[in-house]
Image (cartoon, rainbow, N blue to C red; front, side, top):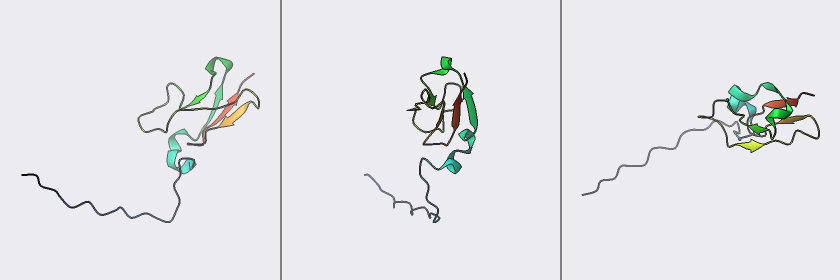
Length: 81
């Protein structure tokens, strides 16, 4: 015989909006990073960053402007000459 339990009560949410691009959600990666051409194509999270609790991998266009910001965690990357 199968038994079912009642669904858990929904969690209460504060009024602050949490989106993947909210840097406060990912304080561990909102720092500034200097990258070289050897790191291209640039992605966030980069190899070596803790990824167990990170956002999906996203490739960032940095070649043209020399800087890029991750839309998920707010990490700022600067391309060194």
